[in-house]
Length: 64
Image 1 (spheres, rainbow, N blue to C red):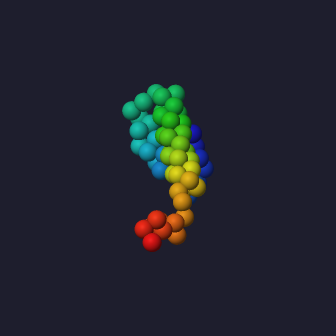
Image 2 (cartoon, rainbow, N blue to C red):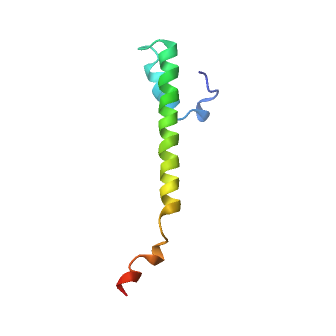
Image 3 (cartoon, rainbow, N blue to C red):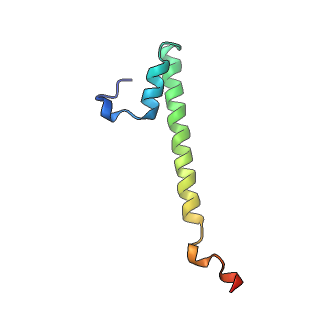
């Protein structure tokens, strides 16, 4: 799971690096994949919510 130079490591790489001694390599790889998928899902959810949110100029217009 070597990602190359340290500047290319992300949070998951550092987290997995810290826990590699506690788990089997297959378990460590599975956990890394699960963390990355969770992070991707959260980012996609956030992007979708931003796209579906009405523009700020529409807020309060019902009150005018």
